[in-house]
Length: 305
Image (cartoon, rainbow, N blue to C red; front, side, top):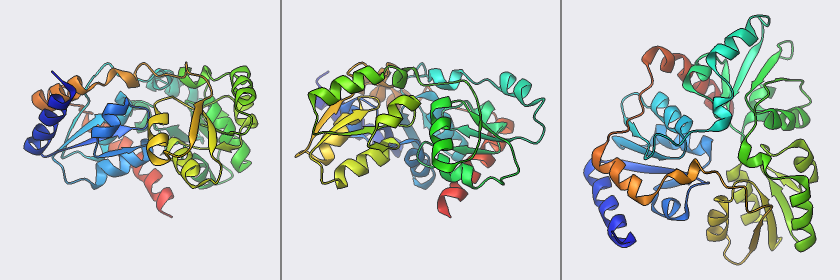
């Protein structure tokens, strides 16, 4: 089916289903272009809560769809490909966390939204890369903070807040491909460019950066900056949004291999099938959802202060 025809069918089904389409900043360009909102994890969570749509189609990876389902118990949440997982989220299991906390009775657990619903349910508060530092600052200073699963984001938060964290040994395989030597090579090729990286990058890469922030923070920073060229150290799907916002500026990937295969599993065809069939509904058991919702709501309360 031609792209224009698929897009027309998606638009028709979206009206019929009273649906909204939410897409992460790392999605394919054509998915970003057809979405009602494109954003980072925090923006998608907020949008899922605000929408009056009866169906939320989450174009991202599974934990994002789970988060939307947890925050919207009265809505149908669909993911166009149920195999779109997150390797980092799989690095922290509820069983592993339970064993880890057995000797840390007074620990305060801050879990990145890049976790399963079961792990969120065991957490005191969730965070995103955009608000992790604010969440950590909100925790009483006499509490040990267990931060999971991303050790790199945890390192950046410790540097930003001065708080000591007990870090889980997880990481993002896509951001792990952004090696310091690749960054140095990009800087040699584009010496005038500003280096903007995501805090899921290694501490060494973050130390090299001119700006460190979430995907939405990078998008906003580059749009507002007087600089004309930028090296971008995060998943390459963000380049589409950067170019759309600032067509008069130049953007170069820190490395072209920072490509998340899971994010790219979502296609226009799968989005069409998801709206047509409503088969891959994301359902979180209520016992888990209730506890996970509390951790997500605490995160929202910190953001709104």
